[in-house]
Image (cartoon, rainbow, N blue to C red; front, side, top):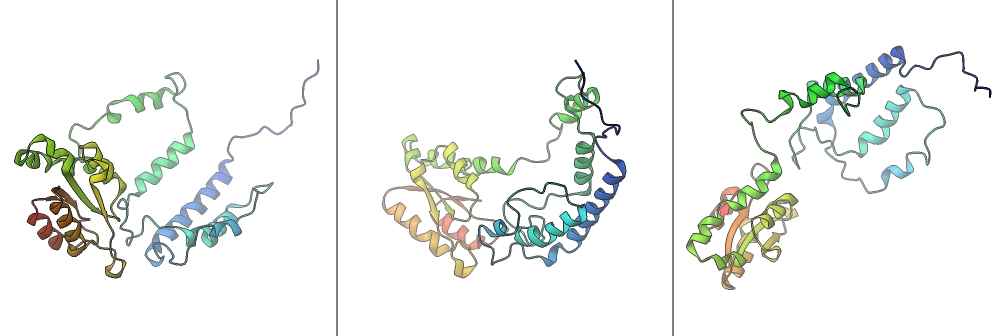
Length: 258
């Protein structure tokens, strides 16, 4: 049997010169982006779902485009349609979490591109992945934000149970704004708050989406009148909620607050 002819040119997995040129173009693009980041709106008010469908082709091109052309596309079509998470004016979800060290680490990992399935596949990577630096730190510096959704409503629960018998657990009520992260509701369920006892209070767009004392007072008083036990009020500290005003409402009914 014959064999398939081999082309004279030996394929390289990566062209070092092209890689260097493209990488410099991307780095310069990102440097420009971060230099001008505060000039972008966090998210354009006019954005509607489906915007990108009319801007990108239905299929990928047969041949790759130059990096300059790709970055022009990103600059023209992608950036105006983004929520800019690293913007100094972005206050949702999580704080800014980008660093030069993070960029460099991602580039090293992607560039080496190894798969440490077993030690023989990538000895150094396997040892690094399983070494002391990969384990839990001797002195933890904090916890994941989602764990606080469990810890904060759990705190006042023993006090409420101490004032009442254990049957009161079915009557405990937790309150939060409709702007609160969904993990808080999951945390309330985990500490035994029935789903029916989780009150989601609409924030006011007219006052900047904050949770006002009046908005909280009405459902709390209605629950008290029904024999329910207000346990916890979740305020968005550091964001938009008037914490002192909400604290007064919470203390009046013996609630904990975060």
